[in-house]
Length: 599
Image (cartoon, rainbow, N blue to C red; front, side):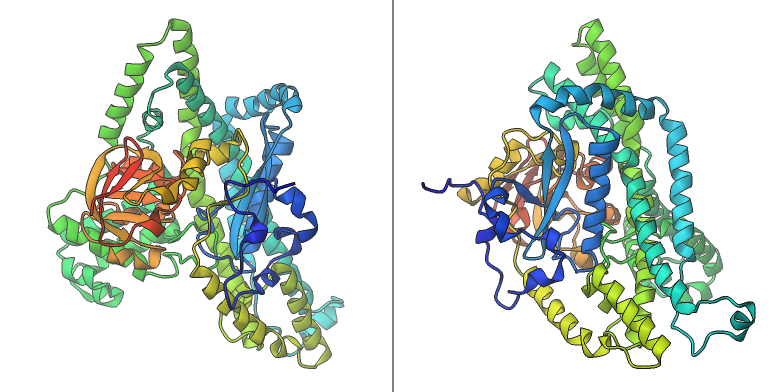
């Protein structure tokens, strides 16, 4: 019998790039496709999650995928009992993370509905109180993570420990601190999804309801009905704008643009600016240049050159006469106009249901963005700081040559390394690791570099007929239509289709970027084209003309931020950053979701 032709290739038919044939050794067995299960796994649809993992994943970082998938799943499957959706499975292909949504059998959906309504209804009915408790829990986890320390083991057990009869040595706490760090990470990701699944579910319910009433309504018109939000995710950018305006007010334009903090402090009025700079850091500089979940992401609090470069750009805009404000009043006016326009076309009983669903969406919507600052940026920033501290201790012990060497080992391998280090200290001998790990880590670095030169395909195998999981639709923008667009991507040379994520039409030169390290290349009026944006890229949104991304739905961070900044955007094009080249002239239509290569 001939094998059925799939819309996308089988994961078993995707070759490894030359020089990276052993890439699978970097990940646990349960994160890989297993040849013994090929027949079953070729029936399952996986899509590339390059929204959160835009580059091949370092071995230690793969633990983040484990925790995010596990904790997302526990809420869908075990706590909220979402009627049509369970959790997700994950696999790696050539170092890139792929996800599969686990559906609920049709015959089981109806029985889950009353359970979901009861459980989710409790949270919706007590949202503010429970969310206040959530903030308390998150801050407790951040404080607990801050207290964890890793220092080299000393020459001997302190004499006072002997006199106390303590009965254990410093290795006990050293290894326990690693466990505490991972346990805290696990608890933090459970908090991440405590409200998030409900936020997406409420918005998807509202979205579906409006679509049923008005089948031809543009998707971003529905999104506009909840725009104009006051989110803490925009606060770091607002702080930079304040610092830029203050620099101009104090006559510090040139010295602040120079980016030398010592020179700023020494300048006339420099002490006033420095006081504002230091006040802004806690907590608003706990902000990452990427998604925040990767060890390679840089934080403002650790790299002052990043916020200083953004401030320089804002100072130049102020000098040019630009007013640095987000158009909240315009967004709110447009929001209210659209709501009134469509509400007036509904019958009274439909209006009542519409009002309830809209009110719930607006209640839960701020969390959809706010949680990113507290979890991905702040909490994860502390976690990665502690991880680098541990990596530095082991680097000094000879286990690897560079400070970030730990991120090239799996967390399960790290347990062996910690015991090797502690056992050798206790026994008075040399550990084995320094003779084993440097060569292996060098090989893994090389493989990841090679894998990073290959663009991942968007999906493998055949998609399901219907996609119902809220995250898949709202965040990643994975729908039957988007999947078909990916499959058809090679049929046209001069146009792309994606999600109509943020309204408006703009024409300009393309600037294709793979990550935040090249944001300074963006020129006034250019169209930013990338696999995915991060909320912390907002400081450059004031000078670009529009945004095109490879992945992302109507509720992706790129879509939300662009709407809030009034920028046309098309998300979920699949191959936009591969097909478009820097310098091409693009016409981006955020009303229809089309991207035309004009020249």
